Image (tube, rainbow, N blue to C red; front, side, top):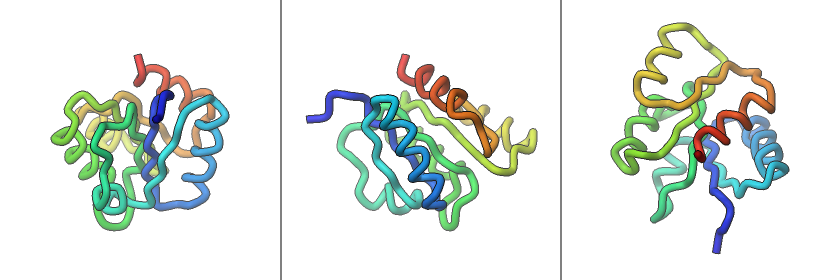
Length: 121
C-alpha cells in the first residue's frame, strides 16, 4: 500500500520523465510516469494521485486537454503545468484552468519541489 503522496508525471520526453522521477523520489515521493495523456488515460488509477505534473505540448492530447479531463475526473486534483514555450497567453490559459503552478523549462529543482509542496498542502 502506498503511504507517501503519489505524484504523476506526464511528459513525452523520456529525459524529462526520468529527471523528474529521480528528483521527486529523492525528495521522498512515490512517482508514476506516463509518456502521454493517452497513456495515462488508458489505465487511470481508481484513486486520484496527490498531484499531476504535465507538459503542455505533447503529441496527441495536449497538457491543456489533459488538465480539463483531470478536472472532470478529480475536481480538487492539483495540477502543475510545464512548458518550453512560456508565452503569457499559455501561462494565463494554464492558470485560468486551475493549474497551481506554471513552470518554464528549464526550471530549477527547488522551484518544482516548492510547487509540489504547495500542491500537497
